[in-house]
Image (cartoon, rainbow, N blue to C red; front, top):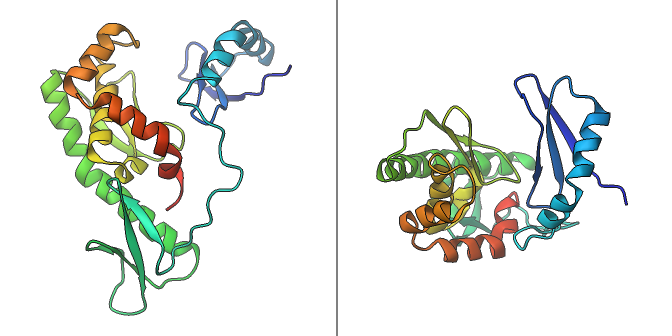
Length: 227
């Protein structure tokens, strides 16, 4: 059976790596000059590992048709783990405002979604970035930069330069989930792999780890929806 995968090349990359995203898609990160035959050979050698990863309990099949929410009055949007009512306002509001509900200016079509997305990104920078610094100090790790990024199928990542990248969609999750994702990424600066030591570090700094993992498993797809 053919194994579908997407190849992403980079001139900076020195070796090939394979990731299985939460939607079960397979992404091969390859050096710029590596041939497709060589890539295919490596993927084939990892076929069993890939199938095991695709069957992991925290992976899911993407919804063929996402729920049909629209940014209209009476609908709701998720923020810090709770759903809040949306009100579309025809006058007096030029940008998204939040006061136990979302007040969204009555701009047309997709621009409402863009406005709410920018609001979420702003809140992610305001509330998530300071949490990263707090946990980094507690764990005794040094970080170069903290970035809020748009990465649909990954909640967070650490780079070789000790940069921490976090998905803006996390701002929709409860704070104990945000803390878990932050600590998970920072712990990789101490222990690169998911060893027992790694999980002990995460559990000590984020004692609600199991609760957070369960929340993400159940609600991860909700975070990835536009609203």
